[in-house]
Image (tube, rainbow, N blue to C red; front, side, top):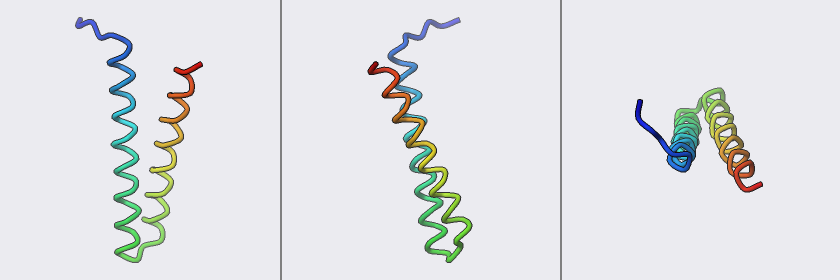
Length: 63
């Protein structure tokens, strides 16, 4: 089993959160362009949830 240090795991988790934020923003914009309020709202929710998780993870590491 490969050894992965803690900093690398944290960095990967942060990158995943940023990708999910971007996916949410893309869905939000697609909903706006397509005129789908439901799709737009889903995108906003995904984006905000990913941002919330990323910020809380960072706060936990800084304590």
